Amino acid sequence: MMGRTAARLYGLYRYRALVKQLVIKDLKLKYRRSFLGYVWSVLNPLMVMAVMYLVFSQMFRFEVEHYPAYLMIGQAAFNFMTEATDQAVFSITGNSELLKKVYVPKYVFTLSKVSSSLVNLLLSMVAMMLVFLCSGVQFSWYMLFIPLVLVQLYVFSLGLGLFLAQAAVFFRDIQYIYSVLTTAWMYATPLFYPASLLSERMQRAVYLLNPMYHYVTQFRTLVLERTFPQAGSVLYGSLLAALFLLVGTRAFLRTQDRFILYICVATHFF
Image 1 (cartoon, rainbow, N blue to C red):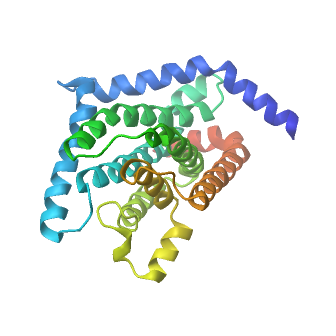
Image 2: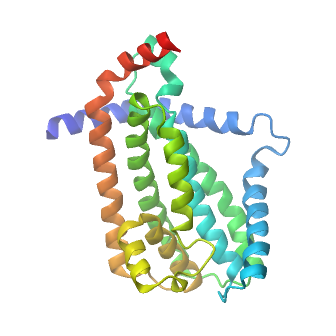
């Protein structure tokens, strides 16, 4: 068991250059026909945040201090997760021609999709800092712990992405089902409303069943409350991330030998 794990980690190290090139390719394709290029990664979250701020702060009037920053943090974290996992769904089926021609570890395609989404998140942090300045958020040394949250979020998204990637090979409708689930997931996460509006029962359910609640709340605690998140939330969020990575990796590795067969069958019929 340990020997196979070590071999896979070494294989990942060997193909690190390929992962890097795939990430660069994804970024270039995303902004290839964009007039603003990478600047759009800063402007887009700002524009979305502005629209959501006008809608939710004026129509619903939530009493949340530094609401633009509160909204921006939730939006950025959740958008990263949805973008990373949405791209992961097609990471295997979208590279079917390459998989049929040359051997590469199949997981590198999913890994590169999630990693390219992480780069987009890091680029959008520029917009986030501008929102912090404009909304009067005081910068503190607790912000140095933001990478701790991003690691949890990345590991969780990678695990979920691996599971979705292998599932999409055998069940092509997974993309439509997942799209509906992420919409419900968004409303079940306190992104644009305070968690205090939920009933105690719903708050417990969200705490136990919604990993994104922990990552968003930790992020907001570091920035807006200028203190360290509750140890229980960090521990639980880390355990959920590790669990999803374990389940996703095991499911991916157990089914990857059948990918080519199902891809060829799908190509034959469609």
